[in-house]
Length: 377
Ligand SMILES: Cc1cc2nc3c(=O)[nH]c(=O)nc-3n(C[C@H](O)[C@H](O)[C@H](O)COP(=O)(O)OP(=O)(O)OC[C@H]3O[C@@H](n4cnc5c(N)ncnc54)[C@H](O)[C@@H]3O)c2cc1C
Image 1 (cartoon, rainbow, N blue to C red):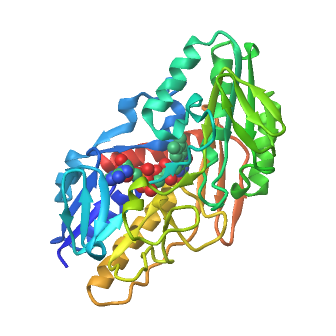
Image 2: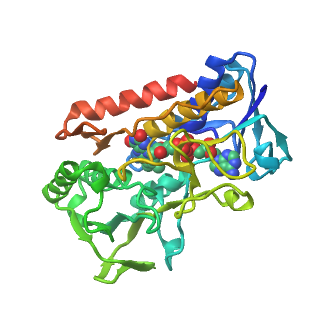
């Protein structure tokens, strides 16, 4: 094997790339993504308060690719043919001997009125819109919530929405205008955030109560109007709505024969391999995939990196005629940040920690950010 194509330039893709290059200096690696840059998504929570600007979180990858001897094609994947050997892209076909798909996830946008809300996790522009809207609001209600993918419990990401609402509370206090705002957290789940574990959820809700953040949970969402979150248990008035819908697979997967999970993600085995008739040496890593494992397996950067490394090792093993045998341990590791403090949550098959908020964890989260950004500069 001499040509590997990686789709995406996020956490999973870059971890796979580094592992491929480490193990195989002569490999021809092509990365296909819409832009030769890395966006540090966990830092979006600091954009509304101005703690971060777009340019702090958007890292051009030209030097990183040159250092690793990688070709970048500025394009979007659009389909797949010949059992995985030809990736169709917006700039034409790219042939490979092995493929790793790491193009992230997409949000379900079927609720009526969804265009009224900001989905902050869609990227820098969305987070900037929050900052702009906040600046224009003198007073009012802000509703922040998330939902899952009913067909796939793991295809959701709630942690950042806790961070957004706690961060907004901190920001409004710092700006001396918290008393003019009502903050409401909403979710259709009776126990939102339970993948973080019961202790973490207890702490998060205690923290919201302590800050006077109201909750509206356990009621099925009906949709959104310009100034309301509509639920079966009544409506929540809101001048600004931040909402993270459940996740599903990228639209371009529909143009492939790749195996899909019920929730629409790429259905992988424990090694990240996509098993379907006629499909060979195709792996998935990160948010694009659905993997066997506990129902709390997170859609997180740390997990995406572990999956990227496993996919790279397995692809190389398969091409060397060996059995792919590298698996990844499910590990949920996150710091739920409030702009000034953080709560550390760690969940593995053996351990479950949910440590109380402290300044130290806020600084630790900033340290992780620095390390990641250094790695790709
Ligand atoms: C606000 C926020 C806060 C978060 N906080 C944390 C945290 O504190 N800790 C943590 O561990 N995780 C956190 N996460 C989750 C983490 O960022 C994701 O799980 C992680 O980015 C997933 O990595 P990925 O490589 O699978 O996908 P992504 O990082 O989404 O990368 C996908 C890549 O694919 C590219 N792409 C998309 N479509 C195509 C296409 N058709 N063709 C080619 N390329 C394509 C994209 O441009 C991008 O380069 C947070 C996420 C958000 C949004």
